View 1 (spheres, rainbow, N blue to C red):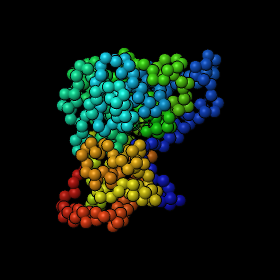
View 2 (cartoon, protein in one colour):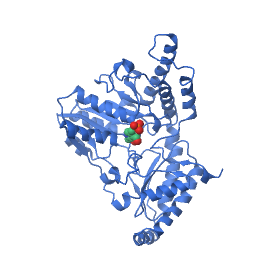
View 3 (cartoon, rainbow, N blue to C red):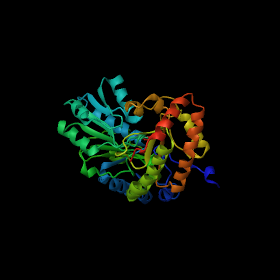
View 4 (cartoon, rainbow, N blue to C red):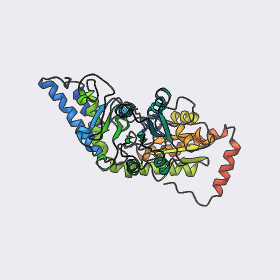
Length: 410
Ligand code: PLP
């Protein structure tokens, strides 16, 4: 099989491949060990042990206690559960804070709170590199602030927010404000130690770090009140009803253990591959611009705009060459709506439309990266020829050729 015939998957922020070890951990709970973990008999108890192990593994990867972990069905559920629970426990506080670059499963909940329940929301701005203005955050917090919900790493650009510092600012200004962090894109990419920060709640999602789709968790710091989002039985110590998805939870546990073990590889080998890919594209393609903060990013992600070219066309041509990348986030692609993250960063529309995200994982190889580096300039060149903005791109090409210094990006 030639390399062009196989899938070169660089869309790991959308979802990731299930690790073989994860699958092996799951299989017994899809075959022989099918008991209900709540059953009193020994068979149920045996299955229940898988939940205990997974809880310990997830807690260990996050620097948390096992009792602080609640299993959920996905990152969206964890985010919804956190926000809805906070508001139910402190109904008197009617002001909430989030950012303009959150995932839709946070932004749309906050919009719904404003629209349907009369909450006052403040959406923090970001600068052209996707960074927050921490004085805006500090000024936005009042005695009425119920929560601040903020992401650790951005799914589109990979930009990492300084969560420890942010949490200190929030608690200094109002110690009663609950801090919820969407950690979905941070797990497995950067080190997380919940014992060492002031964050109250953290959402994670298995399919972003080589566990299957349909399983996630919510970390809730000891002492933080929580009301169930799903009401029913006593599962998860009464905090989330529904018979547990044992096989996937066992997989989540194993994936968390592997994510911790592979953090160094992510920070060195995966980062080196990402940097090689990014620098080569920026050097070879005149109308390529890096989006985001080159210094404060998760190691696997690069978001590059090819100015004056339509992102969907780029994706189709990459796909024809066997390369699976993404235009903005998977949730916003499919519609031609320009990315809300890049818009918040003030990126010109001519660049937003041609933005392409490459997100790597520990399963990518140098051979694959070299193949992408070979294909991208040819594809962009081809699309330039049919672009109505060909003249603008040509001007950039001449300007680029006259530069003696290639800008350092990472
Ligand atoms: N938060 C972020 C930052 C994400 O990137 C995603 C998914 O893309 C989610 C939340 C939602 O996670 P899930 O797909 O598990 O619901």
